[in-house]
Length: 117
Image 1 (cartoon, one colour):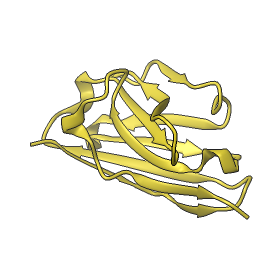
Image 2 (image 1 turned 180 degrees about the horizontal axis):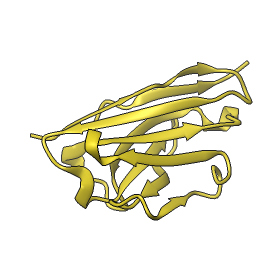
Image 3 (image 1 turned 90 degrees about the vertical axis):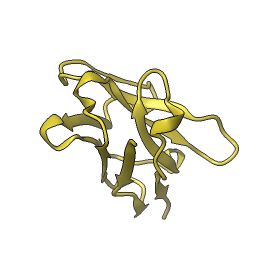
Image 4 (image 1 turned 135 degrees about the vertical axis):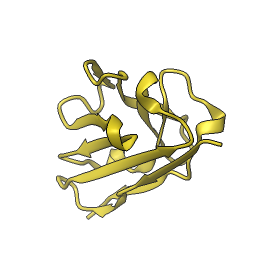
């Protein structure tokens, strides 16, 4: 059984930074492109960043390009999302999962990010 645990969210002021972590157990994530998704209240889930299995290729949604950085440590089966220059519109629950296809059996509880003064 695969278990996904996201952490690192919190309340931060506009312009601040957070680093999210996602640790996966029950499978080896090296073979997967992994992504960070977010879902704000009343909105569809969106993929904001992804990283290939080797870490060689990263992609970002236009809304976060230049502010967010995705990385991974395959030895720790962990994926990270460094978020800088946060804006109120970044407020959402953040999830990690395989990308670009979301796997419902890999869903974690998510971590809440709130950007507010």
